[in-house]
Length: 262
Image (cartoon, rainbow, N blue to C red; front, side, top):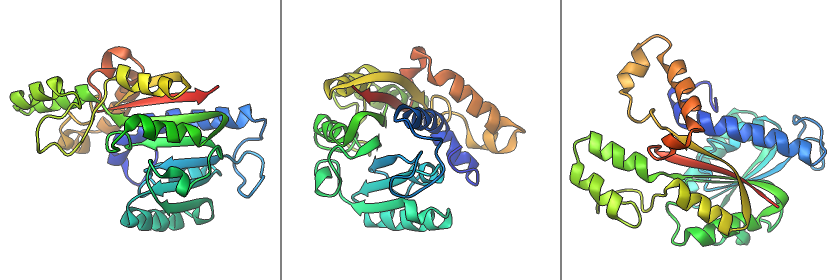
């Protein structure tokens, strides 16, 4: 789990974290380095990771705990302040750097072609041009680098609105090109798995895996998870089992794509 002190938060991050951690391990081996663990410029086993839209460090800090160097680019000063505090509390302040910026102006603050792994989590929903934002993320990769994309899924939003009794809004989300259920929808854009993988492939990457994220977690009453013995662990295992099955991608709240640069 990304943060053992926040068990409920792990429902939102566990699937992606396990996939990402495996990808980092594979990347270390692919570049001929030793297992991760030592920090510092040129140290064996240390990858350079760029987290675009990384906010307060939900993934950046756990990645740094593995020994990697992480640069977080985010437009929010408040999020970057929280990142700095979280990194200090975790003892990885020397391996995490926060910079104010966004996906469209990425190379005003980040190095082109300078990263082994790039995270693009919760970004494509909000940028004006998802294709451009994704192209910038890809351009930040070193040869054979790995890209992790996490974006809002259309099916999960439709299902959630329908189960809440908002049937007209659910139908509106289905019909809307951006997958929005109405003017009050806080998410500007949602994707199907086909749309998201097509964007990644159009940016020149080879898709390695697609996972559905939060297939059940957002639908299960919180009181059930909090009060039933072992319910959290059982739900985590269910999420992990369903994540790789294409049938469940269509109802996931989020979609995760892992891809590599040729």
